[in-house]
Image 1: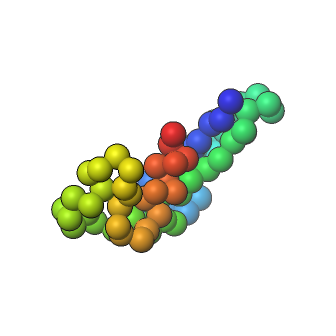
Image 2: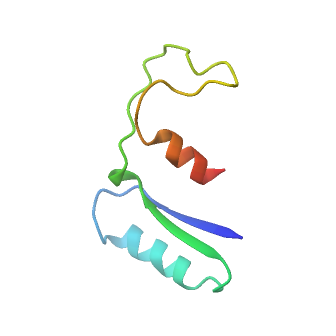
Image 3: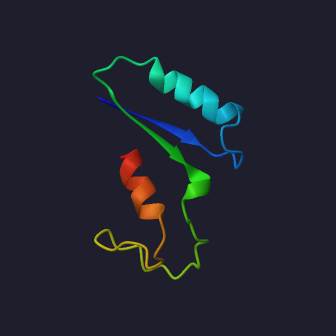
Length: 73
């Protein structure tokens, strides 16, 4: 099993990050844990080019969105 803590606050080591880390730390040891700070990722705004609409295609923007979506899956 895997668990991901997602922190969206731009404040490093703020309350949100501290709580997310505590939750992850208190999970059983057999769970794979990861913390993702959204402010550390580069996610560009969609430009509505529709290149991603076919199921076999991905977004043409080169950013961290595909990495983040893969982690969520």
